[in-house]
Length: 78
Image (cartoon, rainbow, N blue to C red; front, side):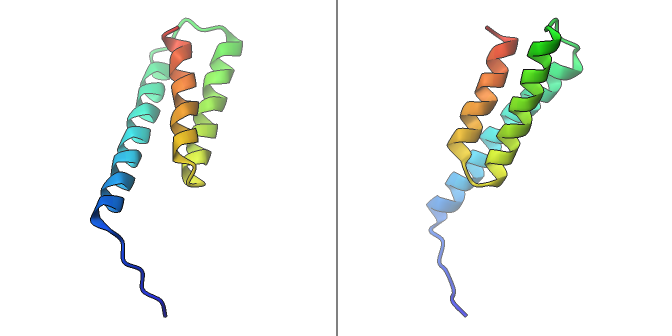
């Protein structure tokens, strides 16, 4: 059985990325709960971007996830 050593900085970076992604997801979720004045098309796009961002995060594509979630947030704040 192989044992892998993980440098503490790598763990910190992973935790930071997780926190960044969680904050962005929460920001989107909170904004959606407030029933924003978005068109049906914009609302659908935000929901799709939110789901895509989460899927990218789970696939380990963290920067792509952050970029995708940021696109969703920009729809609320053009």
